[in-house]
Image 1 (cartoon, helix red, strand yellow):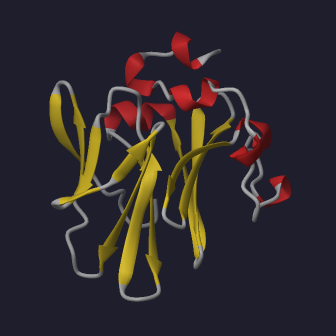
Image 2: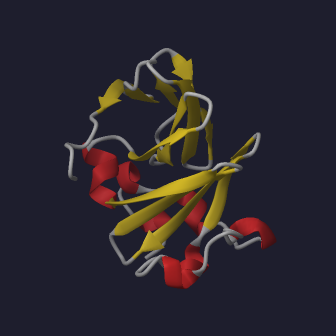
Length: 156
């Protein structure tokens, strides 16, 4: 199924973009991410030294991979999470007393912020670098308005 065939609140159009040379995460092999369709990876966002990749994981799951000079993190979620929560997010603390929120949003999302700080947003991916202690309230904006993305419960 193409992204154009999916409901708009679950559509991640960057996955329909033709593959380019930079789409495969250089620090990761397919064997490290079981179930992730490695050929579906798309480099969706580059912001300074930060890169956010999006991939399919089966028919109804998505995977987000965040990489920067200090390392990275990943998260997966069902497509329905985009409609129910607003985003699939990976949270990562980094050296220098900072944390990073990065993730996937559906096509209708026009802006993402963490607290009052705007996140970089491009091709269904976002990333924001925040000082420790700053608000971790994630807000997505669509033409229909803003909504808070709830943090998953511990152990999720």
